[in-house]
Image 1 (cartoon, helix red, strand yellow):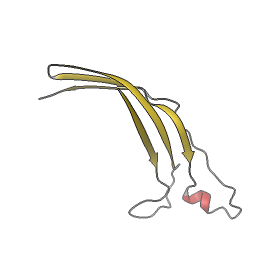
Image 2 (cartoon, one colour):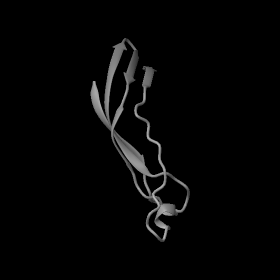
Image 3 (cartoon, one colour):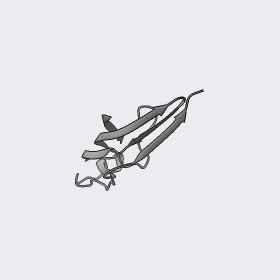
Length: 88
């Protein structure tokens, strides 16, 4: 199988205040994988690989009067995900 994945953390909350600590940004990945099903069991193994990363400015970064602050962020290069399930 082949899929795409976009995940991240917003710089502003939809509800409530946005002044808390966070490292906002997002990552876009291509996600190849394999799946197997037999009877009531299924298993999947996927390994999304990052193709684009964007660290956006947080609330604290925007408070810098010089406009130079742009905090750190760490994005993984890849992730290995294993899913096993049984249907009832």
